[in-house]
Length: 113
Image (tube, rainbow, N blue to C red; front, side, top):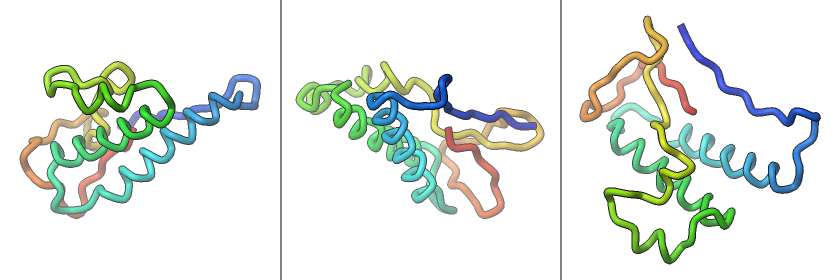
């Protein structure tokens, strides 16, 4: 079982702003691919991906850099735009569960969303 996410402009062309947002998300997806390796723990992976997303949101002007530096860990500003996890196991169920403190191992199949 699986799920699939695609992003396409309805009329066939992105507006300039849509292109900026699309490219920012694509950079985070590619960066997430680069750090997803055996040995990294899911919580570390998620945190690094959130940090990438935060930098992109600051670059897009959606989050203020000063406010991001002053934010508390209980209410990260990035959650307004990125409220879910980056990945989940893919196996017998669409969203298989995995222990967040155990490192990823070779042969595991994960999504990157």
